Amino acid sequence: MASVEKKLKWTSEKFKRRIGTTKPVFLLMLDILQTAYDKLHQSGGKPAAQPSVANETRLRYTQRRKGMKRVV
Image (spheres, helix red, strand yellow):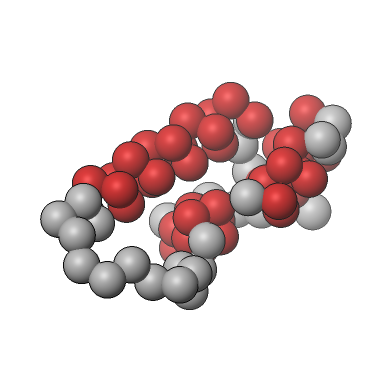
């Protein structure tokens, strides 16, 4: 989550330009993704020491696949 916290310190304009959405929308999408991840893994099992890909990174990959363009 450190990378998300760092990005949230950016100005609103820079955040929208780099990420492709506004801060509130990104946080909402991240919350939805985390809820779905928790629900999927609630049945138990051996937890991974550390997830291979963080949820915020997974969200950014999904944005790119869906055709959300990044303006640099």
